Image (cartoon, rainbow, N blue to C red):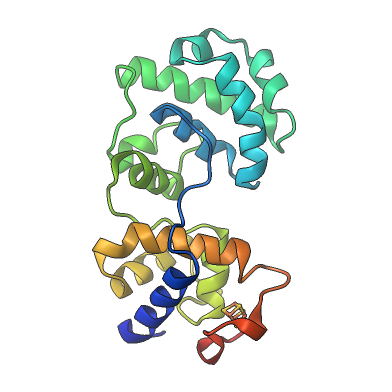
Length: 207
Ligand code: SF4
C-alpha cells in the first residue's frame, strides 16, 4: 500500500498528462447520462455514444422514451452487447424516474441505485457529473492502474479500491483525479500496450 505522498506524485503526474480530462459520454439531459452510464457496462464510451446519439434524438424526452416500445429501443441499441437487457433497463429507469422521482433524477446514492442497471460505481459517476458531488467511482481502468501501482491488490473489490483512494486523495480532488485516472488507463496505461518507456511512474509500478 502506498502513502499519501506517493499518491500525490501519481495524481500530479496524471494531472500533467490529462489536465482537461472529463466524462466522455454523450448526453444533453440529466436522465440521459443515467441511461448512458447504464449502457456503458462492459463496453466503451465510444460504442455507447454511437447508439445514444440516435436514441436521444429519436426520443428527446422522458415521456417519448416511456411511450417508445421495447422493440423500438432495442433496434437503436442493438450494436451493444446485452442490448435486450439494457433496453429493459432503459424502460425501467425512465418509468422509475417518472413515477417515483417526479421526473427528476435523485442525487442520493442509495436512491440512484434503485434504478435498474445502476450500481455503486454508476451512481458515483452520476453524482459527480450531474450534481458535482465529490466521489471517486472505480471502473475497469482504475482497477488495473491501482493494481499495477500497488495501491490495490487483486483481491480488492472496486468498493475497496474506492475506499483506499478516498483515504489517499484529498476530497477536493476526488472528481478531477477520477477523470484523470480513467484517461490515464484509456490512453496511456492501457491494458495491452501501456507506454511504460515514457512513463514517469515506473519506479512505483509493479507491472
Ligand atoms: S510503468 Fe507502464 S504499467 Fe506502470 S503505470 Fe506506467 S504505463 Fe502503467
